[in-house]
Image (cartoon, rainbow, N blue to C red; front, side, top):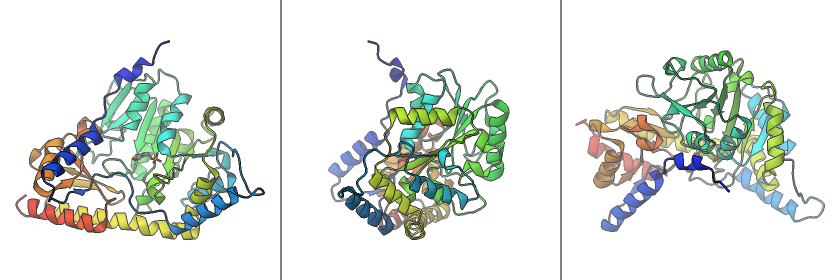
Length: 395
Ligand code: PLP
């Protein structure tokens, strides 16, 4: 047998293990110091009541002969697809039910979708970005090119930033972005749609953080842009929207306008996937009810308030940053031209605040740092008060 040697081309990801190791070494040496973690990419608030009620009810149904469910439809139950359809409709996007596929989260489908594309496609990925896009393509032996996201383009690279010799067949866009928190407006996204249509490319649009968008003029879905149904697949998740990181549910939109791709995805899913648990789908359905929407908004607003506290503090300390407004992530330039790992150590040593070094998301993250709003309000306030002591005024 031969193994897939493409795995040899993956860079080892030491990011979160190195962070954990450095923090643990520090706390062992300084047991009296309180370390505050603002690097966390996971939600911390629990599921809302509408969801847990629906989960309990579904559990009970599974224990009764007449309501028990076995294998469900691989694409998801119609009750949840209809709820997702209604959610899109509320943002003026019309989808047919068989364009909506329920998933166990965006990460799996972002990897799985690559089954539909030939090995020789050229892939374009922004740098910095969520590392899954790069690694899944390397595993499949595809060539990956990068497009620079930087302060000059406000971390929102456009088609004019594509290098001259670069051909892009598969284009990744993540908006609101992880790690930068930057979000494309409709005009900027339209340029990408036009580019993809003109070049017969496909856009893989990751909208995992759409629920953080506060401004109705900003697109939550790429399908708000005319023509996008002819060139884009969209991935979304209830992980950050409704605290489903451990419960696992998301949805992927494969428009029927994309030629064979919709049918191919049905074939792929029916062959390799047996669907998301009925119980989880009932919980997910509750997210889209009036009550569910009200309840998840309270949690999202809590994180947004934290993000504002972080952003206001950075402004006060004169530290350049982006994100935080339509995103749980705040992306800051390390003061005094520090490198991101240097800044990580500096913060840990001086004020015991932990964030994520930008270098972990690509070479353009080298001088940047990601803070997140997923911590508690108390910890966020405490961490920012420490920031002020360290960086206030003198910056
Ligand atoms: N896409 C982005 C940009 C993310 O940051 C994450 C998780 O952090 C995911 C997708 C994965 O989401 P899920 O939990 O639905 O797999």
